[in-house]
Length: 202
Image 1 (cartoon, rainbow, N blue to C red):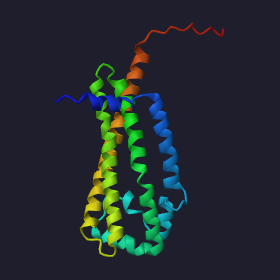
Image 2 (image 1 turned 30 degrees about the vertical axis):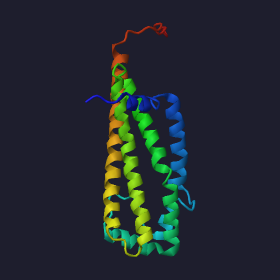
Image 3 (image 1 turned 180 degrees about the vertical axis):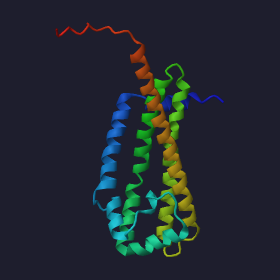
């Protein structure tokens, strides 16, 4: 099946050093604040008030897990978790664009004569889609608390799909980088030496 040219063109916009630098910088700044500060919307702040990791950073949650977490949070913790959800309207796309750009740059260098391959970098955005789905169910359980119902189950499945998608993209990126490193190492081993011989010390 041939990949539409419009998709290749859009992903191709992220396959450059400038796009990677900008998306990487945005991701690094946002992730540092989101994961390592005490900001009102940050994960450590929610963990402090709720006594456990937020549902969004777990591989899977059951309805019981969701109810237990929200119970333990209390009013202040649930307010902080709501703030986290507001910030999480931005994080998925920031991470997705960075991952997609990193994959696009790597795939472009791996297969420069096959531009269609770069479109595979779109897997970096799949996890972002599941992340937004997870967020929708998180908003639902917050609104429905204490009766989280089916939304709690669906939140758990969305979390699992998001995590597996992120792992798939990450493993693909690491494999691509390993192939590039191996190619560079082989090139150095097979290329003739062009420098001047090292002078004798004797």
